[in-house]
Each structure stands twice: as C-alpha cells, then as structure tokens.
Amino acid sequence: MSAMKPHLGRYFWLINIAFWIAVLGLFVHIQYGAAEGTEYELTWLNTWVLMSPWFLSWIVVTGGVFHSVAHTASVARSTIRKVTYQVLTMAGLLSMYWAFCSAMRIVLRDDSFADYINVFIFILQNSSQLDIAIYLGILACALGLSFYHQSMERNIEVKHLQNQLIQEQLKALRSQLNPHFLFNTLNTIASLVRLKREKDAVSALAELSMMLRKILENKNDSDIRIKDEISFINSYLTIQKMRFSDKLETHISVAANCLDLEIPNMLLQPLVENAVQHGSQLESNQNPLSLNISRDENELTFTMVNKVAQNDHHDGFGIGLSNTRERLTRLYSSFRLELRPLKEGLFETVLAIPIGVHHA
Image (cartoon, rainbow, N blue to C red; front, side, top):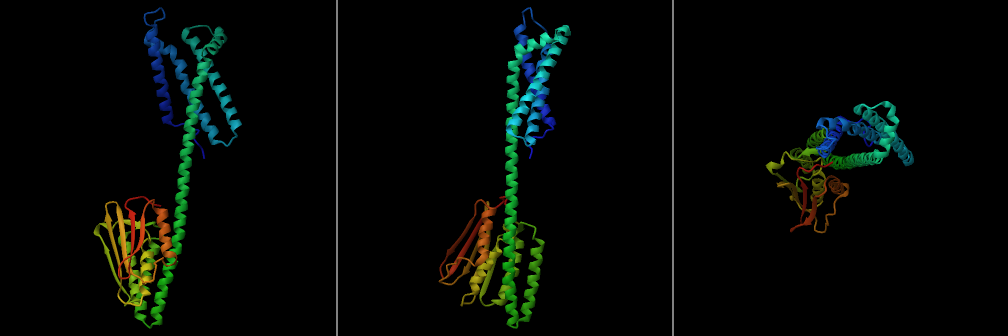
C-alpha cells in the first residue's frame, strides 16, 4: 500500500506554483518598499525579476521533496535507509538549487562567470542556513501529508475488510437460517402426507416452490421490500395453517407507508416461525398470532403478539431467534428486540430498527 503516489498530480503543481508565486510577490513588495527612496531603488518589475530565481526555484525543489517522500513511502525500506535517502536527496536538491541561483545571479547582474565559484561560496555563507530551514519545513509538510494519507488508507482498508467480514458472517447466518426454515416446512408437508391430506400437501408444495423461487431470486440481495417479505411470510403461514388449521388464527397488518421500505432479507421469518412453533404446541385452538408493522418518524416497528404456554419462558427455539439477534447486532448500531409477557397467556415481541440507516 503506497502512502502517496510517486507521480504528483496537477492539483499539487497548481498549489505549489501558486504558493511560491504568492511568496515571491510578498517579498518583492517588502523589498521594493524598503528600497524605495534609496540609492538601491528599482522598479517593481526589476525587483521581481532579480528575486524570482530565489523563490520560483523552490517550485522544483518542493516537487522533488514530495516525490522523494512518496517514493520512500511506496518502497519497503528500513528507517535508517529512508533517513539516509532523504539526507542525500536534500544535499542533491539544495546543491542544484544553489548552483542554479548562483548562475542566475551572474546572468541577471551581467557579471562574469569567472566569479561563479566566489558567488556560489557567497550564497552558501549567507543563505544556506535559511534554505536548509525552508527545505526541512517543506519536508515536514510532505511527511505529515504522507502519514495522514497512510492513516486514511489504512482506515479505508480496515473498514472495507470489516464490511467484507460482516457480509461473510451474515451469509453464514442466512445459510443456517434457510435450511432451518426448510426443515420445518418439509416436516409440515410430510405430516400432511401421513395424515392422508394429499390435496393440502400438493398445495403446500406449490407454496413451498414459490417460496424457494423467492429465496433464489433474493439470495444475493441483503435487503428486501417489506411487502415482499410479508408475501413470503404469508406463503409460510399458509403451509403451517394447513397442518395446524385449528391451532392458529393469524392476522398481519402493514401500514401503507411501510410497504416499500427495505429491511434485511429474511429478518421477520424466524420471528414468525418461532411464534408458530409456540402456538402449534398448545392444547387450545384458535391461538392468535398477529403481526403489526408501523413507522414513527425514523423508526420502523414490528409488533408481534402470540399465545404461549403458561409455563413457557419464551427463551426462543433453536437457531432462528438467536440468529436474528446476532444479525441485528451486526447490521445496526442501535435497535430494540424486546420479549415481554402479556395477560391471558399472550406474549409480545417488539422489534424496532432505524429507517434509512445504511447497514451491511
């Protein structure tokens, strides 16, 4: 993973050029004002020309510094080798900077190149400390941006890996859930056959075929519309009521403004299946099972009421309910899944999830 691209983009060069032109303009203005009215007074343009090599050369030096930092960040090296590389880069870039500025000073002042060595030494004696300080400041900025970019890339990569992990974990949970549901449904159809209710068994197989088709159609979708989830649940309840025709009295109510909202695929099915198992084990008939879906501003609420045995603590049946809680924990930072007893042997399950919150 590289921290910065070795090839610097156009925005870097635009900002780099604009910055050093602005710095040059500021210092030209100061120098021009200081020399005005003295024997060293020059026009503003001449002042700009004389000072431009000293400042505009930093455009190239800055590019070299950022390129060297990007290069060392993109290549696996030890700290000592990276420091050595930066020291040698600084020596090379500053040497070229001083050599160029010495030559430009001679050209702009119309002096002789025979004095080049003396001019070079003069520059080293008078401006090298300031130039090194400026270079180190640029290097600090380049390193800071490199570390920041590395940190951002690591965070993005970690989040990407976390999302991938969550998706794989959710797929694993769903792969456990579907066989669990299928086992119960096939068990229901087998019971109908044993009871010589062939017509109901054929109808149940037709409903099961439609449900399996929906599962295959949505197997790669993490979300599903509520109306499609309810259609799936209705098919499941149709099959169950064929087996427990006198045991269950079902009612589903969905607010109109909830039908097209999306929820995690197969979220409600295990809750309904759990309630069916409770109702089917009771000795009484016409055991109620109601599901109400409504929304309140940014919260979607599913309220299910079903009848349970008096001595039933409603701890859940097997993998379905525990998988639902685990899925919710992975999908949402905040949700409510409450199980509470009501009067007359009824039990209420309330699930509330946020609307419009992105989930994995």
